[in-house]
Length: 120
Image (cartoon, rainbow, N blue to C red):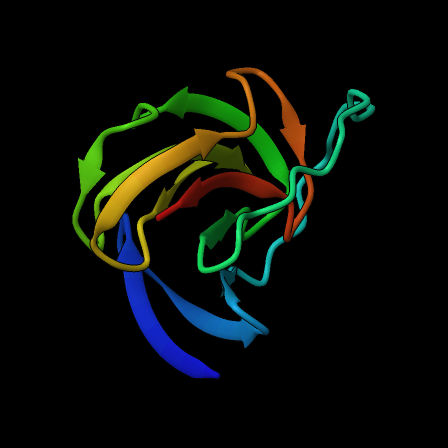
């Protein structure tokens, strides 16, 4: 696992990138819990071999989808913006690549670790 520190609106967060088999999952430990609405039923998408899973770093609500399927992104580009504890938390691309799928919709409730998107 590799750890990084990111700063959002003056608050530092530890980001841990964990590799599980051929799928990598960035997980930001924001050390915060947010009240949430009842989760909508959803199927857990499976990432293709070699794909990178972009996961929620905190529980919250999807405010904005910042990238689109097929879009080329660079490491650090916003993919999804979450609202958690009345803060906007960007979920960013962990590496350069192409967005293969967006697996959530604006307004959806998500839990820590839920897949938001996959990249190639």
